[in-house]
Structures are given as C-alpha cells and as structure tokens.
Length: 227
Image 1 (cartoon, rainbow, N blue to C red):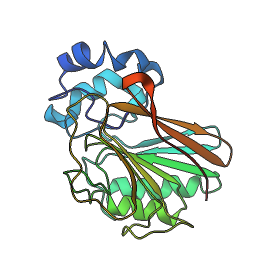
Image 2 (image 1 turned 30 degrees about the vertical axis):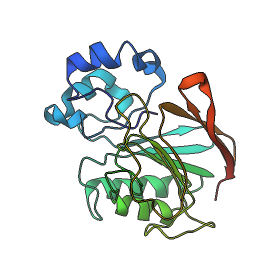
Image 3 (image 1 turned 180 degrees about the vertical axis):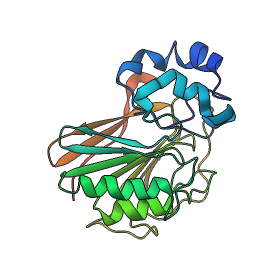
Image 4 (image 1 turned 120 degrees about the horizontal axis):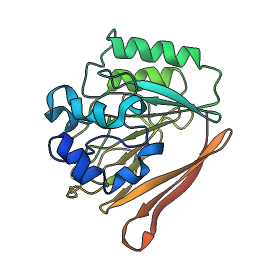
C-alpha cells in the first residue's frame, strides 16, 4: 500500500518518472496506491492515474477495494467528497455490505482522521463511521510526516476496545519530517523517523512493525485480533 503524496511536489509526470520511479517504483508491480493532495497539484491527478493505471482503481475516482486472503482491503480518496450521501460513501456502504462476512477489513487513505501532527486531522469522519458500523479493524493514513499509532477508537475519538478501529499514520516515506504538536487522546506511539510499516495478515488477526530506515531498527511492534 502507498497512502498518497507519492511524487513531490506536484505529482507531475516528470516527478513520477524521475523521483518516484527510481526509488519506490521498484515495488510498483505490487503497489495498490491511494491518492494524496499533492497528486491533485496536477489537474485531476492525471499523472497519478497514468503512472499506476488499473492498480489505482477506476480512473478519476480513487476509491476501490480488493481481497487479500481473508482480508477485505478498502482504498478511499480523501481529496474528493466523502460526506454521507456522497457517491464515495454510498459506494463504501455497498462494498462493505457485499463483504460483510469477510473476517477482517483494513482501509487506507491519505488524510488522517486522528493525528497529533500539524494537520490536526478531522478528515473522513463519515467514512470512519461507516467502517465502524460494519466492524472494520484497521485504518492507515499518511499526510502528516511522522509515524503514530492510536488505540482502537470510535468515530468520535472515544476509546473503543471492543469495536474501535486502530489507526496508523505513516507519513514517513521521504519528505521532511513534521513535529508532533497537541498529543491526541488514545495516541500510544509516536516516532519522528523515516521508515515503513509492515503488516502480517492472518485469517483472523494481524501483526505490525514500524521499521525505521536507519539500521532497519523496529520502533513499534504488536498484534491484534479482528473484531
């Protein structure tokens, strides 16, 4: 997964070719991306669709889903309308209903719902509410340039160990790192370092580790079961 802002600063064809391609592009064949706001610095995020093709879902929409073993994976677009009644949320409801018997669900998009970083979060509240309603498990976002993990929360940011979604903010792919500011409730781990998150998905559970770029040291690790 790649959670947006993939080719700085303007998501141009040249930036995808000359910046993203020689580095993260070696993983392109297995990447299912989400669009970020920097992709939309180019009109309609056109170079993003051109670079990733069908791997980014239907051109121009930016939301799609796929199966990965026992897991249902949902990719949303936080740069287009995502309020209740919008085409994206109506699609999400239909998609989750069609996969309601799938044991585990992970969703990812660019702008975080909750974050202690400078953006302040607050995005995609109706998407989170819909995922919570259907018993989803994990949300991964980027946008703020750091790593943060939250304990399971409901759509309003209240602790919800039984049914809440665990959020990972992973904006650590190469752009300058941001400081953490007002620490949000339920924030349990924060790391200001470059790195990647690795998930291991099993039939009814998952594990994670945030691997820091320097010396490949593991800075956060854990396991959880699906709802």
